[in-house]
Image 1: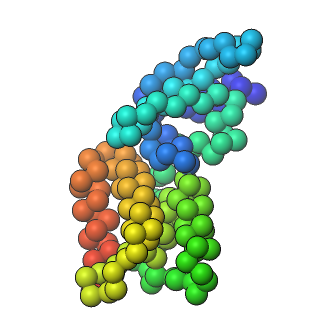
Image 2: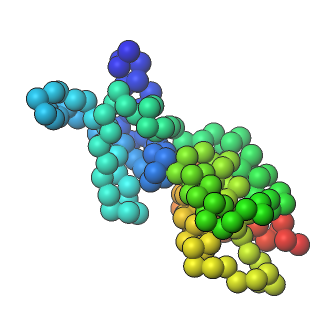
Image 3: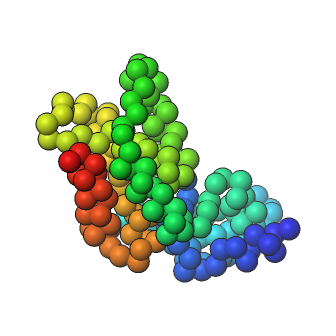
Length: 169
């Protein structure tokens, strides 16, 4: 069973870890923890200057996945073009739902958060917590768009920005 998991991710692959976004597998190493020998993916998140070790047999269980396909990125961009769907629930409830979507690691769900929280210049100001959620979702989205497209984050952010601006026009 663990042999099948091993072949799915290899060193130098980009992966999406739900709680942290896009990272790169640096290596696969054996480590003894609490008397048990564990095989671990060592994932580096360059931007956050963070290294994460995930047991290979738990990778799927925690939601670690390969990068989205270009088709999934195109779907996410279509989602961004859609009309914002803001529920009339209390902000704390909506914020919780947005947080769950961001941490789900699902590119479409993250695009929905960006779409729903995006503000144009003529709209009312965002609250601090709205802005934090928006920026977290935008960062996750642009990092994955950049990794899939093989570009840098700046050009990915411009691409996402163009889609959001074209929606407002």
